[in-house]
Length: 135
Image (cartoon, rainbow, N blue to C red; front, side, top):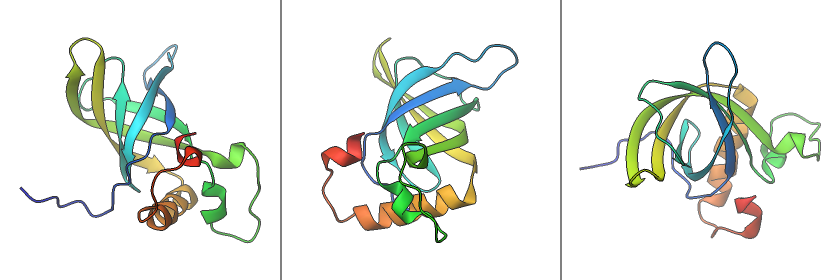
């Protein structure tokens, strides 16, 4: 079975906060990416989320600000954050009742964030993971 993905997946672990989009109070859940591409992530989470569920995700990518388009490149914690709206397209149970892998397809991401993420992945795909990449 061949992999027909359009974008390279980079194995990197970033801490993620995510919440299911629904009316009322949104409860944030913590997870960790297992890999990331310009169009989605594989997210390790403590509970399953139904296929098709829309979620809002926030994760920090250390150093991504250097890849953002434009002349002015702020050097702050806020500049490291990527916020996306995604849809759950895959759910795999890793440890029964404890850990799940969620395939998340980005359905709404700021174009500058997506461009920066693509450039970041290109730059890092030949480089081994470092402490900076796991922030």
